Length: 283
Image (cartoon, rainbow, N blue to C red):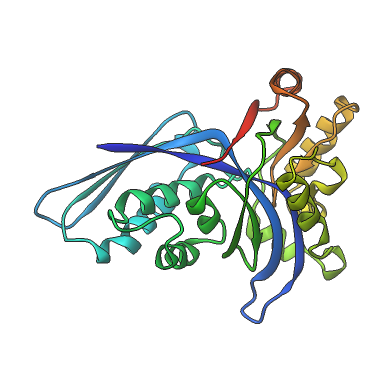
């Protein structure tokens, strides 16, 4: 069996630009990949064309097995491969409903593993297939740091020095409920993420005021658990600036280095939040 890490993604900045005729929202976002990941394994062989999935790991209980994005990704890509059995293993380490793209990263890992020797993460056909599985799957497939546009399908790579962050789960959040609660007066346009992308590419320090998500107010209205957790976290750590990633419920704080990020994460854990220090990865 071949295993690959399925890295979490984090929205350093997310702005809503508008809404399309198909109902999806136009977004502008700076997305980075974190050194926090699930593990996805694939084994192909056998005469009968069937797909099996085994889920394990610390957060396995939070993951549906029957309607899992890993299975959907395998079913989507298998028509392009010779028939045969596919055995999938998923070791869940990322928290669910946290805005860290765990399910999308798992699906992207399956696309990479089953996509065939001639495909790549930036293959246009593979990216289009990824978009049919979810708006975060193309970014998770491409990897690295990206300036994202459209509903998640337009990707521009950003090269920058690694960033250290503390990431904490303030509460659970639902993406669909958050977007349903969003109002047009909360759309802030593309300028903030685009400015942040330029600063990153120039290797300049990240300005905290450019970080965060247009979806925070809507996410807190739609998810009272997240609203309460975020209020408690900020109230107990007034010297730390916490930003929501995407629709939440994970939040992040920028660190001046690994030590500072670990210190902030440790204080969040002392308050009862699941938290860890993370660093961005380029690949």
